[in-house]
Image (cartoon, rainbow, N blue to C red; front, side, top):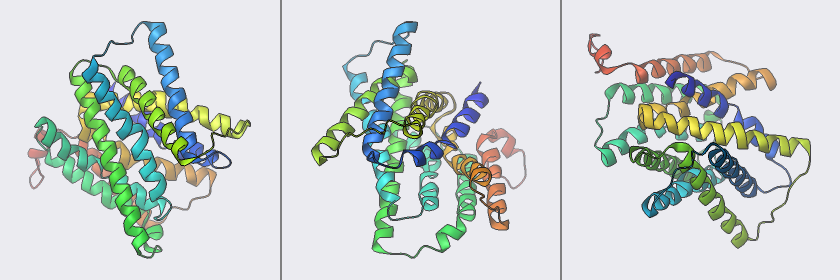
Length: 299
């Protein structure tokens, strides 16, 4: 079950960039994000009410959902949105993939979970692999104050994502399932982002064409309803640090799709990076005892 959820999350979130690209046009990106999570919340509430699985929540749980919505369905998207204006998307992907390490650290700080060395080693290999995958893009980008600002925003977005993971884990420890907390979190996140758009005077336009509506529906159903539910279920089952290795694999799937639809050419450094990413994946999911049995390996 965990493997199915893991692969589902990687495949879905590794292809959402196509839909995000199709969203670009008349509608402002923050408004598209509002539409995405407001509709996703609506779908989740309908499914939960029809199935009778909507869980009751107390005031504390609602406050945590409010914080989760701010971190996971609002601030992190805005941070990455603005970061991509100043730094290459490849660099943003590398920064985001540090979620594996941040989740391990935060799980230690907030839940007292031991940091598994194989997770840190695997996460480090994954980061190195992504660096090789995007090396041409990174090497061709000159450093500037805007680069530092973009990196800072990317890191802030990653920290918000990690905080959202911790909050979801906390809710699951209290017996609340991701579908219920996601429904409320997405509703709260969409509401806060909508208020931001109103304060900034951003128009709530809609493109009534197949390209925009189709891409929006893909982001709502697979990208949000299924993707976030599958991922946060993994956070509860496997732990935040292992589940977050998905963030290292998303760009790998995206590059493979790009090779088919956009003619991306694999290079020797990129292939070496792919090998490192996959080795990191093996290390992250290998049991510590298995590692301890191998001379020279970290337990």
